[in-house]
Amino acid sequence: MKTEATTTPPSAERNSPFLDFPGLCARVPYSPRSLRALVQRGEIPSIRLPRCRKLLFDWPAVEAALRHNAKGSGL
Image 1 (cartoon, helix red, strand yellow):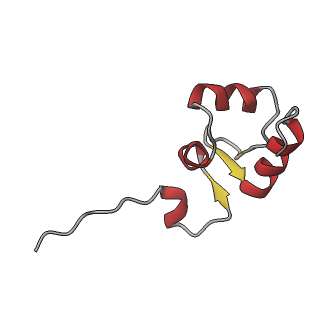
Image 2: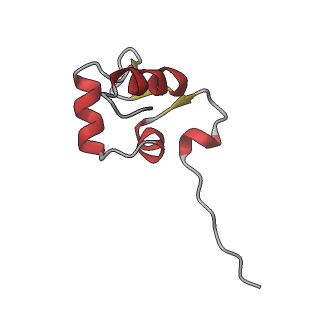
């Protein structure tokens, strides 16, 4: 019997309150390029660990920032 393999994002596997960039991309309707631009402009809050290039995102803070920055979208 063959079973389908399901993949879960690495951020969901660790049971962490933080998302990594691929996990964030899976939750929001923006392209990765647009998300990177929003992070660089400081419109999406992120955490950069010392001596590490990896960004982490606190989902409630990201969601609040997206709602705050939405212009007339009714979010």
